[in-house]
Amino acid sequence: MLDGELTGGHVLRRAIRGQRRRIVAASSLGMAHQCCEALVPVVIGMVIDEAVATGSTSALWRWLLALAVLFLVLSTCYRTAARITDGSGEHAAHRIRLDLGAKVLDPRGGADRGRLPGALTAVATGDAARVGAVAAALPYAVSALAGLAVSAVALLRISVPLGLLVLLGVPPLLWLGHVISRPLERRSEAEQERAAHASGVAADLVTGLRVLKGIGAEPAAVSRYRRTSQESLAAALRAARSRAWHDGAILALTGVFIAVIGLVGAHLAMRGSISVGDLVAAVGLAQYLLGPFQLLTYVNGEFALGRASADRVAEVLASPPAVAAGQKTLPQPVTGRLRLRGVALGALRRMDADIAPGSLVGIVAKDSAVANDLLLCLGRELDPDEGTVELDGVPLTELHPDTVRRAVLVAHHDAALFESSLLDNVRAGTDPTEKDVERALAASAADDVAQALPQGVDTLLAERGRSLSGGQRQRVALARALAADPPVLVVHDPTTAVDTVTESRIAARLRELRSGRTTVLVTTSPALLAATDRVLVLEGGAVTAEGRHLELVSADEAYRAAVLA
Image (tube, rainbow, N blue to C red; front, side, top):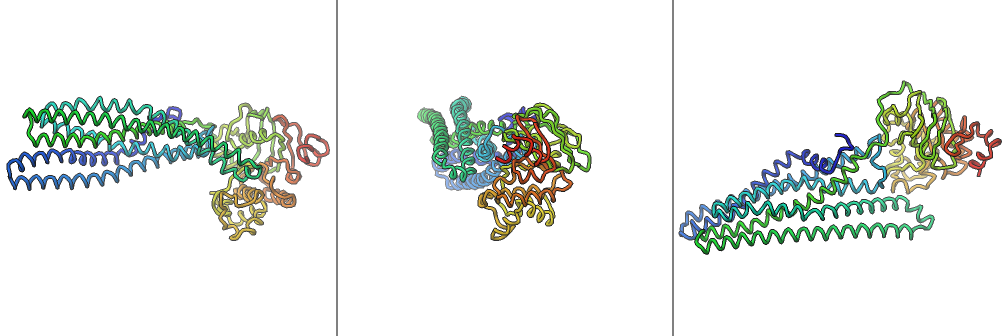
């Protein structure tokens, strides 16, 4: 199935199919439980007619034994079915979370477009749980319908009119329940949408909390979150009112239906059409019917919530990839020659550039949008609208994104650290040798950071690295990029928060460590640019000048303004 064809219905069916065995097992046990419960009032009626009315002690003990067996079976079936049912819901939700995780981590990208990270988290938690609850609710629906069927047969045995009343009355009642659930479904979808947005805003504010405090923007941030939270609360209250109205309306309809059954049974008993035991059984069955109807009400509500959440899950899973998966491979070994021909994307305007293998090249872009769009192209997070980017003569669009990123590592300026040890952050899922890690730490001056920490490189970086200063975080992030040792390394502003002396040391060590490997520094740092072989100057999204750093400082006024200002 193509991603674009995925709908909420597909998500629900996939969740149910994936738990088919558990659902069948739980449904079978649930049916046995409901059948035994339905037979309890029937057996009580038999006790009255065959033991109490006749005074037969043996009949009394026989039917009491039958009641005991019924209760033993129904209690055992209930416990086992509940355990399997809950498991099916959890497994279904887990499967959906795995699908969402795979989509978000897909090298082709696309899942995060137009969504805050907190919103994706809300879909993977709240919405996945609601879809999983549908798989858990299905056995309840099957068992409730089985209970209704057994009750109808029992009532037919007692009286044809009573049995027909149940058989003919249940379908319209179920249809009315479906109609009543539609407003709940709509409002539930709006509630989840607002809750996801509030979660995303909260995550966004927490991420930038120190920055907000630094610029004194706490009141604006609080106001923004309060407004978002109030909108989420209003949507939740509307959904709660809709749920209350839904449950109340279903309960009222069910009560009326059961009362009609009781009245018809009483009328038949007064006419002598049924015995006292039959009347007791009929009244007991009418009261028992409240259980299956409540189950169906619960199931109907879960399906309404699940359908709304399934639509949101499907929207993420069906997100089109940001880039296509090419089939070509790179010649080995990768030399690292980069060529850009007429590249246009966003702020980039037909950029041309040749970067020789093993060279250290600086790129100066005063406009941060130009730098960002260039990084997106080089890392193949997006493909150019026009032109081509080639690596060793192969267009990046003809390569799989995984292939590109194994060869070209783009280290963004805002690279995040993980809540793990400094050493784990530098390794970051790769497998560098101890010597490679030491060299990367030294080249990035992150060894000084490690020495200042209580447990050195084994120190836990709390709050995703925010326990470090801005300059320390940048050095650890740079060490991570250097330890990966890719054929082509593209680094964006790696030293903006680092002091001048340390920055000069990093520039010299970086050139030594990356000798023979292609390295691109997108920066305006004079210290880093002075260490490069060549500098490209971007103005208006295109290359307007190139040369050595000192040459450009002497000859290009715009370059001086960008680098020395």
